[in-house]
Length: 397
Image (cartoon, rainbow, N blue to C red; front, side, top):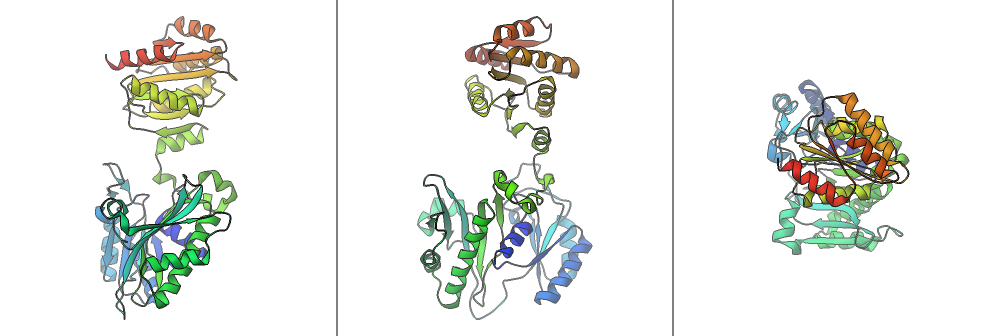
């Protein structure tokens, strides 16, 4: 589950991580009020207006701008709120901006030059350990840094049994070239950041940039936070931070119906029982010359109501040119699934794309007979290759 920047910063702050302070606003007037409050609390004269959407690269799309007075705060917030922000991480249509973060200016003059660093915490699946990835090249696309100057990226692996140790935090600060007050501040920052990651059951914390201010404070200027959805039962307060407006609406609807659905970019809709079989079905579609339009696991109770709900979800995607239903009847009997398909088809009455139904397992022969004798425009199959051939046939028409 992704968090907005302002939510991620609030989470970090609760664990003692120094952050760039800000106030979220949902209108231009609220943005001006937030700017006034920030000025009173922090003495900041300028403000940064940041679009709050679940996507990186906001600055490149015009979603992050500096305001030097209250009039500019009002004008910029009015421009950003309501816009469809297009970034390298969004679709061509972009994402609608519903709110902005009005943040303090932290690039103030002082004794030293400010410096930006990159830092993220995530799981290294190859070793089963958490790791901190960091670089002196903050504020840039880390992918570009990794490709062009990989020697500038460091990583520190953390044993989850012990957590981050003091010498590891010091090594990170040393590799970033820090000394004196900034060195001590960075060790505190790194330790608090890892604690926040660990205690919140996150799968990713990415801070880009981590800023060393002109007076040697270390703070998070941005925050990309992804929480492990499987652990949210332990964090009821964090689960409430979910913003459904930022998620794929078909996936949200499918989740509410108890369907495991992931939207993809292909042309063949999939309806399968079991995650493993669903993955194999997607491979089957690829081999047949098509592209899977979704991952959809209907689970073990593929009755008429559930099948009908799955049909409706799949057909919300206008790119779907065919639907492949692939069911292995172990716990559920194939004839019941077949009857569910027939009932759902009749209830909906407006399915215009070809449907291939492959049923294998308990009562598969009875199921095939039910489909074949239904009088509906549904093709049945019992073997994997047979289903693949029929998918290819309908796509080539």
